[in-house]
Structures are given as C-alpha cells and as structure tokens.
Length: 253
Image (tube, rainbow, N blue to C red):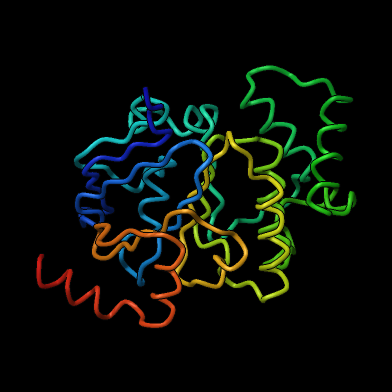
C-alpha cells in the first residue's frame, strides 16, 4: 500500500484583493522529495507560498490542500508551523531589539508547546550552527538587523535547522544573492535535507538548482502547472525561456 502524499494540492484557486492568481493548481509532494517550481514573474509562485503558509492577505477560493491528510487551509498560521510547515521568505524582515538566540528559543518552544531547558537548547543551537558553519556570534545579533542578503538567508537556514520542519518552502531564496552567498546557502540546505523532510523550491532561475538538486521540476504559468519533468526541464528552461510555454498556455486558456 503506497504512502499518502505529505502535501496534496488539488485544483487550488487563490488570489489577493479579489484578483485570482492561482487557477486550478494541482501538486503532490511525498515525504523526502525535492520539488522545484519555476515560472515567469506574475505566474503565481509566491502566491502559492503565501497561501500554503496562511498569509491572511491571500484567499483560497477553491480546491483543497491537505498536509499529512489534514485540511491545511483551515489551520491558523501558528498551527501550520507547529504541524511542520516552514516558509523561508524572499525578503526576510528585520526585527530590531530581538536577538537571534531569543527568537529561536521562543520559536522552538512555541512549536513544541513546552519549554526546552536552556542547556538542551544551547546544545542544539550550537550543534546546528556548527553544521551550517555559522559563527556563534551570529546568535547574539538582532534578527536580520543590518544583515547582508546572504546573512538573512543563512539566518533562515538556521531557523529551519532548529525547527526541523516536515515541509520547507523556499520562496526565491536565491533572490539578491551573489554566487558565493548562493553556494553557502545551498550547502546549508543540503546539510539539512533528510528522508523525513520535503522541500519545495520556488525560483525564477536554474542557477539555484545547480546546487540543490530537485527530483521534480514544475513550470507554473498563469496560475497553473503547465509542465512537469525531471532536472533536465530546468536546463531546458534556462536555454529556451518561458515564451513557448506561455504562448501554449495562452492558446488553451
């Protein structure tokens, strides 16, 4: 008997401020799989990420989303996070006055529903920082305050390492990174991957997929997945662009 998908999206329709952006999106992600969603600007990639995480500005108007068999769309944001859904933002915000160490401790306690003893927390934090090659001074800085683009993304990788989600959604995590920062962040993601965690990469460009290898690549155009394939599909898109697929999607709309 085959195992049920970790994430099961059926005919999802969603939008913002009355404008429909996702127009019947269907996707299955099994535990331990790495999926990439690629597409041009305005295709609905970040809308999908926001709907999955429960951003109240976005409304689902049709279809279903099940996470571990449960109705994800009916869960409040904090319940989704506790259930094991994690979103790495395209543009992480600064939280002046709140240190990384305090932020991470509160997040971990909120997810577990209990107070982790300080000694255990520190041991876990330092182990994850060693794994990601993050200097311990990093934990004493205010969350994203004065961080470079690469440091913001590394901070999110550290959050992901501490929270150990079942599903991590990376929304254009390569945005604004130079090649060295991109490689560092990708190495961090690869260190954290394990058979119990699934990854959904949302990106414009194939370059991220040079470092984080997906098993499945999906092309999102005008709110629908119009084509799926393996890693070779990303290379094809890099060479040819989206124009041909956009034309085909417009012809069948």
